[in-house]
View 1: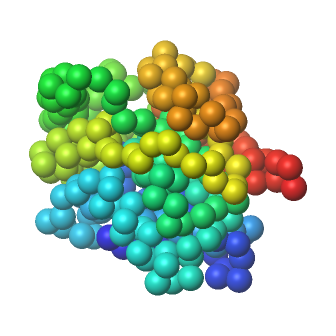
View 2 (view 1 turned 90 degrees about the horizontal axis):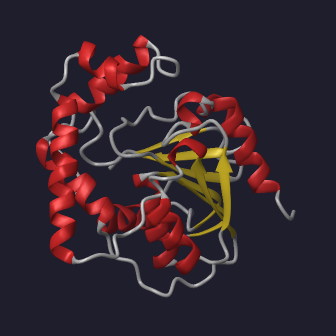
Length: 255
């Protein structure tokens, strides 16, 4: 894993955790804005980094441990904020559970929570997810364009998604989606000293119903925030200015 850093190290540190399926440049639209106020740390997830070919996705637990080790070695065992989207949100939840890193603000954006269902069923769901992403990986640009909302995504956006999918090995696709749905969390999760927010897009509310139920049960102190007009993983990718405003607002709550 590489750790990209942006902004002055004299500023308060913020950890940004990407979703599955996007590359290490996932936060490029918000980095120029947030790096004026924070020192940004962006880990590159194994299997999603073209600068580290030959690597495959490992597990949520191993990635979280690597982030914790790096943070402790580089004086980052406490940061101002941790933001994780989708798979990145799963990593954030694991970090919350481990308690080796602390933060003033935790933002879990559409974060995937561990399935609470019969184990064999998780494999069937994993196979479905693998086939869905494998199919998308092999789609033509024209076909991919037909399944992505043209009112939101430009031709450049669609080409970027195609490149990211093409760079994922079959092993990364399987491990990435299966592990993100079935990682281990030590329950009950103890309430951290910092504030915890669970964001989700208005357009993904139905898809997040299991995750919301998990959050309400196991992180009852989390503040739930619905973001109007957004789908899954769209906050920092399609609405960078609004994302930065919301992020800063969460950091300032109760100050």
